Image (cartoon, rainbow, N blue to C red; front, side, top):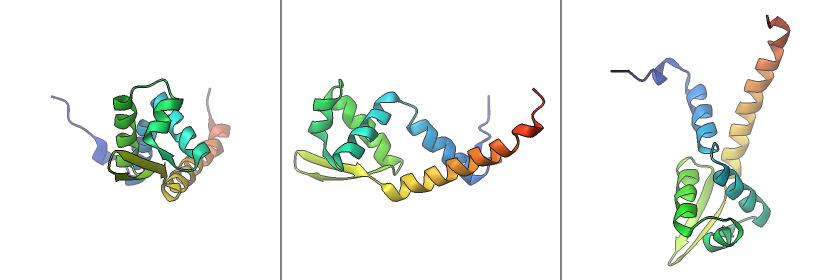
Amino acid sequence: MAIAKTTEFTQQEQDLAAFAKVLSHPARIAIMKVLANENGCICGRIVEILPLAQATVSQHLKELKNAGLIKGTIEGPKSCYCINWEAMESFMKDFNGMFSALQLQKEKSCC
C-alpha cells in the first residue's frame, strides 16, 4: 500500500499545491472571474452567467470557500460571495516568488 509523502514537503509547497488544485477546474476559474467582475455576487447570478446547474455551482463555491479563496454569507435562500483578496494576494505572492526562483535557475538548465 502506498504511503502519502506530503509531510516530506514544506508547508509552503503543500499550500501552493492545494491552491493550484482548487483552481485546477475551469468552472472555479470562471466563478472567480465572475466574482471579480461583480465585486460580490449572489449565487443565483453566477448560475445565470455560467452554463452550470445550481448544485454544481454550489459545490464549486464550497470548494473555493473551504480553500479560503472566497468569503460568503448565507441569509435564507440567498448566498452572497466575494473574493477573499487577502488570501489571493498571499497566494499570488507565494506563486510569484516560486516562479521567480525557478526563473533564476533557467541559466543552469541542461536542456
